[in-house]
Image (cartoon, rainbow, N blue to C red; front, side, top):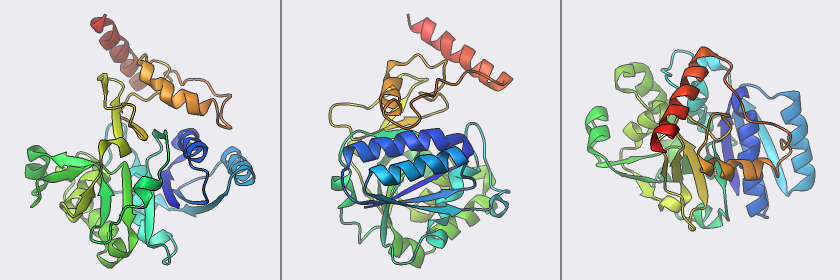
Length: 279
């Protein structure tokens, strides 16, 4: 099984939690490919220990942000959102399929049912649905729009049709249309040519809004939105999915993050206020 994670230095801890959840629930040979701009010495040591403990290979690919420095970012996003668009340039050409996972999720079961799907006729497999708003905003031909946080990628088709390169060009040329960064761009280029996944493979949790799709069938639990489970001001009990795996990881010593900037203080106040208003 080939897995892909893309992140920057701010998400090293959360990547380890996500990877730990994968390894605890998938005792099979796994090749993990990373696209990042930096690897700390602590993360390097952690990865070395995981290689000793599990049947995994880890391949690190570095990206220079100068190639994407002019791409649009906003809200809680960073340039790391665009790292996955370089998968065809940075990964070995012999890889024809890879499962991309965001780093703000946990895997709560076997991924083999997802990984073994036949996607020969598609660019990717992803969760999605019908949306008129996104269709109009991006001028899509298809009625369907997908989430890019979990994607089973057909790398042969991706490379042949230069999906990543086209997506980058779309962001550069249409910044006024971009609201959800790489996800918007990929939807524009792929335009409905994806296999629709069951929500169990990407069950969304918005901790701020109190929205959750998690049930007993959920395999991948994905924390979307700006409020994350590692934020000390998060009071939503579903943050425990994240903390349960963190406590089993090599980062088990860490504590919740607390506000260190005016922006975070404002976010914390809004979160507490929203919680108290529900009581």
